[in-house]
Length: 214
Image 1 (cartoon, one colour):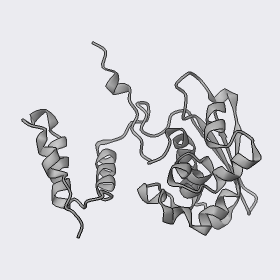
Image 2: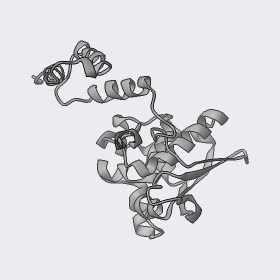
Image 3: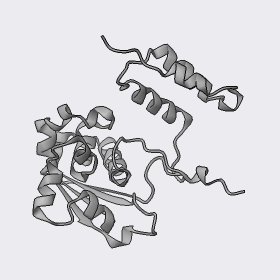
Image 4: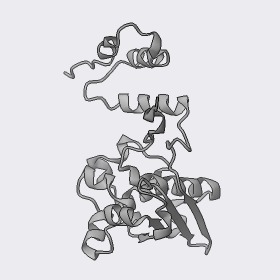
């Protein structure tokens, strides 16, 4: 009688979910105020105490620097400095944002030095409150812009649209180790939209089986 599936969140960004509230805030500020990377003087990010410890280094100077300059893809997915800087510089976040090539980007590594992470107890509103965040961007022109959110994009309170899901499906399919022809990706999407009418879900295994690379 209780269907908990409707309470699940979808992740728009391929990184630790705890990052997402701050990334949402950062993207909103950049878009609303037309902030260019060269405008950014400093960024302050407030996370729950859990997020501060997990993604921000918990105040330990060595851990903070490790988080600012991750040495591996997984490290970058668990760094609030990296994800917020990427949001400022790119305006979006995809699988391409978390690769060895991305980690070597000097512009992103310079931007992470402008980001500071702080704990904010009042953001934690419950045991499952992992995405509340507050972001403050200070510009070289002297402005300060602030955004706060309780629920990250993809939460049932801020749900994905069907178009959002389709876009993420296409983006992820494009990174398959064995390339999947686009016509098969679109065919799979069409069937997913009417899943209750699909007689045998094995069709997805056939459609999404990539071609071996030469």
